[in-house]
Length: 433
Ligand SMILES: Nc1ncnc2c1ncn2[C@@H]1O[C@H](COP(=O)(O)OP(=O)(O)OP(=O)(O)O)[C@@H](O)[C@H]1O
Ligand SMILES: [Mg+2]
Image (cartoon, rainbow, N blue to C red):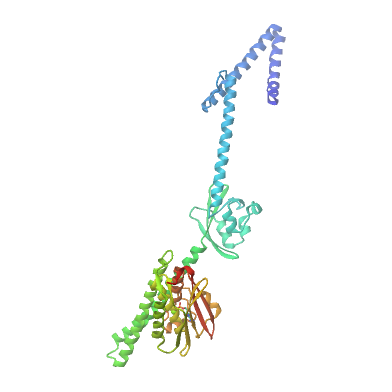
């Protein structure tokens, strides 16, 4: 209404001026004639504009309503359709935007939209969790100010490119390593993508340590063998006793390498297995006989080896693996118990399952080492273990076999007094017949 009044007020002075002037000049007849001509011109201009609007709306592909054949009606009908179409588009757009936000919320990667001054415009829940920020609280805040890490500030200062990545180490209770990628998708905004690589970094470290350990373990015997071969090549004929000593050392070192490779292969086989071991009955009496034999062979009557419990029924699993795990524990007990010590091999039926244990009166282990004993190559006393031919893979193998049989390994030990290594099998891994 207001715009209509403004329109009238806009043309009224022209009409008054033109018609008044003509009336004064030629009288009323001329005045009325000029008014008619002026009104006609205005009406023709409006009709022409209406026609233009009509044609534009037609070009938008908007239909005319049924029976709407006059131009004004058609224009109104088409404007109405245009409004409807606009509403539909807006609804569709908000649906798409909602779906997009839901997808971003579920992404495991953190996404943060920043303005050119690195102030937070938006972020998803993964980013909140990884960077310890809260969108509602921190929106509009500078991200480098919130993170307060020099490496992060330096990373953000340089112009972003698609290839530009960085690493951020954070500690909110747990240690967290994030890979960062900063991209700018328009003049005003940038997107920071964060990816949690903590586990990957740990795995990579384990892999590097593993390669370093294997190389180190192989290097020692190879150096010894190489040295002796050189001696044999360069020195003249040696006395038979010296020659025998050299060959005995070479044989020991070769055996050591052979054992290492065997244990590595066995560990790798166990690690590549998926699922749990098949439930094949293995008589406990057979297991007891094999383990006792191993114990006597290794001890050479230097220890008092006894057997306890009722070894009846079956363990359900893979015999070779069970024998290997039990023998490893027995071998450790003998290796780390001085001559004259006692070693007890026990099987105990309990309401929740069965427990195989090896108890010794040996050197024992300090509490701080216990959680790490099943790591590959971990030895409490490297020199001592190596002297006795240990590679530090035995308990890693036992742990894998236990997992494969849904059993758990527990270690109870006190330095100077002795240790008890136990494997707890669940009820469904035991049968009485
Ligand atoms: N019964 C035990 N008493 C004292 N220390 C033990 C006992 N069993 C294991 N350990 C400690 O745990 C470490 C790891 O044992 P593990 O069986 O994995 O390796 P290892 O005996 O050194 O070598 P191998 O690969 O030949 O078994 C040993 O080096 C030793 O320090
Ligand atoms: Mg061992």
